[in-house]
Each structure stands twice: as structure tokens, then as C-alpha cells.
Image (cartoon, rainbow, N blue to C red):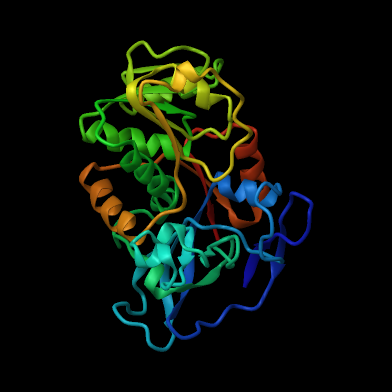
Length: 327
């Protein structure tokens, strides 16, 4: 099969012909129909996340159909459409797994990082960690939901009950979350790069009541802010717009260092929290909610062999919406 492979410290992938994987016990072989390009892929390839499996096939926003079942697989059948997320497996035995917090598992496996992912024509996945997906929906449009959508939803859950929400960085995750928030009656304030008028218009078109530069103060106090951009300076900036008792949620897996800020900006029971990974329950809740909210994703398809172009465009901030590879 064809696959885009990361094999060294150079931030480029190589198109290779590699053996098609075979499903082991409890696994399914999936023919990849689409695979989203996520900022986490950039963090792996650029070395921000250390110790990836090498050589590695990246990609963890996978939509495909089951080609073959491994032994002991229950609840799925050949030909069925499924999605594969970032969380590829857990140990099931550590403190966090036993407490229902499998997103914090001590011995996890991550798709496209420690497990080969979906920048390929086929992949294998643990059947217990895939999601059934709509057979009718466009697979390219579904792909960003598998991480951008899921992490946005988990970030919103951690924010708690809110009426006004600030979103810092309006990319793949934000453009999905904005629609979810609007469906739930939450007023959204979008913060982008100061000069990115196109992103600000994009946010307004998706339901944001206000959009402006990240150096601006919110025109209305925020119950919570979610920071998707991997820029640590946005944490103290967003704190200035959060009301007493409000929360700032850091929604990325990697971020530049957070600069020091006055304690007064945190005082009055404001708090800062980070989101780590997802749980399968998050997925079950989110896909039901996304369907109810009629979420539409803005996608830019790329052929599999153009993965490096897609990653470069993401790195350079040239994407409005989400890039998706189509084998």
C-alpha cells in the first residue's frame, strides 16, 4: 500500500510502498477513505512531541470502512464505516482507567504517534477504540470531527456551564466548536491573529457574535475562554477577559511557554486547566451532538502524496478550516 512515512528528524514525509497491515486479535483492518491533518501531526513531525514510533505513519482523524475483522472482534462487520481517533488504546488497569478517566491512562497508545495512523491507504485499529460513523455523510467532511471536533467538545465540557465563550485561534477545532456552542445557545467571541480579517469573517459566518484580534479585550466579560492556538502568551491575555470565577481552558497538546502574569489576573477564583486526549464516552456524546447541531466542516482536500503541502499550509496559517488527505 502507499503511505506517507515520517522516518527521521527532517520535518518532511516520504511517500513509500509498505506492506498492508494485518489485523491482530481485537483489531480491524480499515480501508482509509479520508484522514484529517491535525496540528498535533505538526507537533510530532516538528519534534515538539518527543519519542514517536519510528518509522511512523502519522494521522489520527481517520474515516474508513472495515476491510477485515481480526479474531474476537464483536459489534462490527466488514464494509462498515468507522472512525479512528487519537486515543488508540488504554491499559484498562491503571488508576485512571479504573476511575473512568481513560484519557489520562498511564500506558496509552496514540494513533499516528505511537501507533501507525491514517496517512495511508490502509490502517489497523483496536476495535474497542473506533467509532461507528454515518454511512451517508461525506467521509472527507467527517474526518475533522475525529480530533478537532472531539477535543473542542472536551474543552467545552471542562469549561462548565457558560453563556459567553471566548475562542482563541480560529482553525479546525474552533470552527466546529463554534457551531456546537451556537446550537447550545452560547454566545461566542472569536479571537484570531490581529491581521487575519478572513478568519474573523469566517468566525462571524459560523455564528460568532464578535470576532477580533487576540490582542483585543473582549467587548463582553467571558464565562470561559478556550485557547486552541499553541501560543502561551494567549493564556494571560485571555484571563484578562474572563469574569470572576471563570475558566481558561488550554485545548492543545503542546503550547509555547506561558509568560508570567500578575496574580491579580488570576485572583477571584479564576482558573486555568488543560485538556488531555479524550474518552470514548466523549466520542459517543459528541457524535450525537454534532448530528443534532447539523455541524458542517470546512475542508480542503489534498491527495495523499501532497501531505507535506497540507502540513506546510497548516504550519503557515494558510488554512481556513481543515486539511484532509484523500488516498
